[in-house]
Amino acid sequence: MYYDFFGFREPPFSIAPDPRYLYLSERHKEALAHLMYGVQGQGGFIVITGEVGTGKTTVSRCFIENAPAHVDIALILNPRLSARELLSAICDELEIAHPAGATIKQMVDLINRDLLKAHGAGRHKVLMIDEAQNLSADVLEQLRLLTNLETAEKKLLQIVLLGQPELQQILALPKLRQLNQRVTARYHLDAINRSELPAYLSYRLGVAGMRGDVFSPAAVRKLYRSSNGIPRLINLISDRALLGAYAEGEHEVTSGHIAKAAKEVSGSNNLGPKSSGARGKLDVPGMLVLAASFLLAIVSTFWVYQQWTGSKTVAEVNAAPVEHVSTIGTIQRENEPKEQKPLAVPQPESQAQGLENDRAESPAFSLQEQALNLPDAFRELFGLWGVEYNSQESPIACDFARASGLGCLERQGNRSSLAFLDRPAMLMLQSANGKRGYVVLRHLEGDVAEIVLPAGPVRVSFASLEPFWFGEYRVLWQRPDYTSNSPQANDAASEELWIGARMMELADAHGDSNADNARIKRLSAEEQVRWYQSLRGLTEDGIAGAMTVIQINNDLNADVPRLKNNQRAGKG
Image (cartoon, rainbow, N blue to C red; front, side):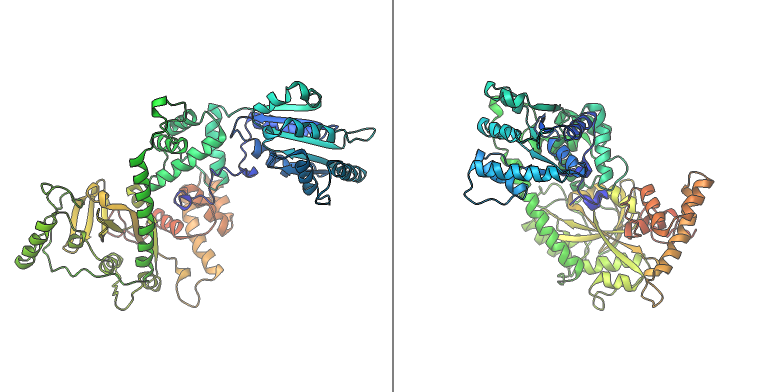
C-alpha cells in the first residue's frame, strides 16, 4: 500500500497492541508504573480503566514484555465466561493439567497447588484479564476467592483487571465491596492531550522507519479535534489519511486528508453526535465511487503488471504519419460535449476524413489517436538516454535496460514525485472508457510539460494531462558500475569503493562541520548510506537502491538526462 511511497518499513498506525509503538505519555507512564508497583506487592487486585482506544491493552503488552524476571503472567482476553469456564481458562494459561469435566472445587485445588509450588520456587503468578468490564458479578466473586489462596506472609496470586470505565461502577456494587477493598492499586487512563499529539505522531513514524514530518500543522490540529486525543482513533484516522495522500500522490498529509479520513472512520461527517435526521442514511454515491475505485485499481494493477513485465504483447497502434505540432489544447475526456473540441492533430487528407467519421459517431477524445503505444514509448524513453531500443529484438524492456547499464523504476505519485526524481518519465494515460496510451515526459517546468506524441515533441499544460493520468509512471536510471554484467562487478569491494567515493563528496557538501565530515567518512559503507538516506528523507535501510542512487546522482550533478533540464547535466 502506502508504505514504500512514504518510506515506511511497516505500517506506523496499526491498531494492533504492539509494545514497540507505545508512546509513553505522562498518563501511560503512570499506568505502567502502577502495574510495575502492583506486582511487587503482596497480591490482591490492580485495576486499570480507560475509555475505548486509550491504550490499555498496549500498556498491558508493554508490561508483559518488561515484567520482572520472577513473574509469570497468565492473560485472559475473552472474559465472557462462566465461573467454571474462567477457572478452566486460567488452568490452561497456567499450564495446569485438569480433567475435562473438573468441578470448580477441583480446579481451585489444582490452582492452589500450582501457586504453592511456584512460591516455593521463588516465582510470582499474575493473572491479567482484559475487557474485564464484561465479567459478571458472580465471576468477579470467584476471582476474589482465588486471592484467598495465601501463605502466612503473602497472597499467592496477583490479579490485574483491565477494562472500560464501567468496570469501576461494577466494582462499586454493594455485593462486591469485599473485592473492592482488595484493590491495592487503581488508575484511570485518559486520552493524550493536544500538546502531546505531535510527539505521538513523530514517535510512531520513527518506529516505522521514517524521520521527518508527514503531517502538516493544520492536519495535526484537525486530527486532534477529530480524535479527541484517543490513540485508537488517532491511529485509524492517520492510517486512512496516509492512504488518501498516497492515492493523490502527495507526500504530506493535509487537514483535508484528515477530514476525509475521519469521515470514513466514523461513517459520518464527524465523530461527534449527529442529528436524528442524518442517522440511517446511506451515502450511496460515495459507496459507488469507492466500489468503482477498487475495481479500477484491481484492473489497472493487473494490466500494468502484464505490460511492464512483458507477459503479454500490447496491441500496437498503427497511426498514419502526422506533422509536428508545437502546441496542444486541453485534452478532452470521453463522452464530454462536442463543444469541447478534442486535440487537433493535422492528418493526411484520407486519414483525416476517417477520423472525422469516427468523431461523428463518438466525438470524444481517443487516446489511440494521440498517444504512444508501449513499445514506441519505451523507444522514446531509451532514446533520451542515447540508447536505441527495438521491441522486436528485446520484448522485455527492463531486461534490455539492465543489459544497457540502466534500471527500470515503476512508481505511483504526482507532479511533485516526478520533480523529486528529476528523470524523464513515461506516463500511462487512461480515458474515461478505459482506453490507454502513453506519453514520454521529457521536460517539466512549472505547469509547462514537454511530451512526446506520435507527431513528435509538443509543449502542453501538465494540468491538461492530469485528468487522464492516475499516477502511474516509469523512469530509467543509471545503475552503478558495480552492478554491471562484467565478471568483476557485483562484489562487495566494488560496491564499497563506489559508495565511498561518492560519500566523500557528499560529506564535504552536506556535513555540518569539518569534524562531522571526517566522522561521516569514517563510517562503514552501510552507515554512510543510512546517513545519506536520512538526509534525503529516504527509507533508512542502508542499501543503495534505485531511489538512493538517483538522489546521489542528482546531488553530484551526474551526466544523466534530467526532467527539469531536458539537456544532460554537466559532469561534476
